[in-house]
Image (cartoon, rainbow, N blue to C red; front, side, top):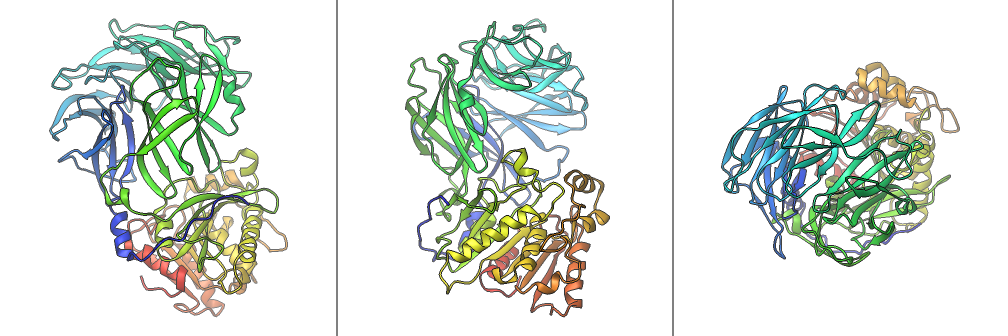
Length: 639
């Protein structure tokens, strides 16, 4: 077992203050830097159905974050027509906002003072936009009508002026089918844009000429390539006309780098990094690429020297996921850029901007930028990653709480949904509410979780409640054995598939648990299949959820005789009556079966339906969050 134990801190703040801080959280999406890295912008939602626009000025030593006055839109988890879908910030502080319409996108320029200028629209269901490489207002837009990836695309230009983009978008030319991701400018003047073209079953980089609307292929293959695979340009360095490319070779992808005219040099050094490796920024001279490596719950950074094919681990804050990223200005010295900006998030830190001064390969001094919100300054419960020994393989877990789980009065084992899911290294509001109530959270990724490779995930295929149940029971035993005898057993919290797994665990080993919270549970894969929608049925078929698992713990069906009578821990069942993933009838059947067995509603178990709520019934509800936390800490239910 590894991982630091959090220090005990003062928790005298009232829960109301915590919730007030949580309501100021900015959930950022569409976060983008300007082409020069001098500015950044993000669309922000507040969790209460509203969307805002924020901008960052990164030119000085201390970045400035501000909300654009007057900009407010409706926000929804469901795509709404007329909802912003993407943004492009410019160095003058203005922002281009793309707004989805049926078969087209409106273009709106939002000035720093909040004035909005409609500058036309472009036809297309899918649009990617690139700001001019020098940061001036203006952009190139690549559009595709319909959802056929083999359909041709159209290029449009939005020209700029000192007062912002001027005039409507101008049709600049036609392109064949494109991979609408990756690519970038090939020169600082914005005359050639590299696009990834789909041709004859492969992807080839091509240069689109803005002036005459033509395009030509950049090169034919990379060093050591037979020309039969795909070359997908991930990043470009306009000042140097350099590329960073994912090159397909013998069925796998390797990184290649070099000038746009070719040939490219194959880079083997990144292969020494275990896990998923993704380039997220390229310095202006093309010499250094920033790599992000993720493996399970771990995430770190490295600098790739594209000239020498060498990787240098980059010192970065632990317990964070970093990216997107940008270098504020290109430099020529080998020691790296003077300031690197990344958006970061961690178990104990909501999304915030971080800057690094890189003094040499692998060495950096990081600072955090304040977004001006109470959430950005709140002393959140510490979070870290621990590795526990499992019955067959190690199990990683996200641990969050003001107290060490070994000595904390209350501990909850939180089980994720899925089964093709995982707890990610991110800020979980629910965990912070639990921690404020004195409950330390251990959120494991047992066998079957994604993020650890195909073999690890396939443990749960055709075996729902099999190896993952064994991991949960093993972890609970370990927790019990490493806590003082006067501490109560851990509680269980699960959502969706995690609720199903939590109930299986509570029945398989009743003595291990103090309380159980099941949010949107189902009785079995077969039972859910009979009531589910077509997409959910397809998921159950794909993952073998109807296959019966029979061992010493019995069939994985909570309705089977002898299963629920073993349940001893007080149970809280929560379900939204509008749930379209796990129908609310599953919880009703569970509560009905418990009552038939003699369990007393309101005493032995609580069944609470949330009117109008969907698959995540706690979302946005202060009362339900706090009441659930109180139940885990002391029992009793008073929403």
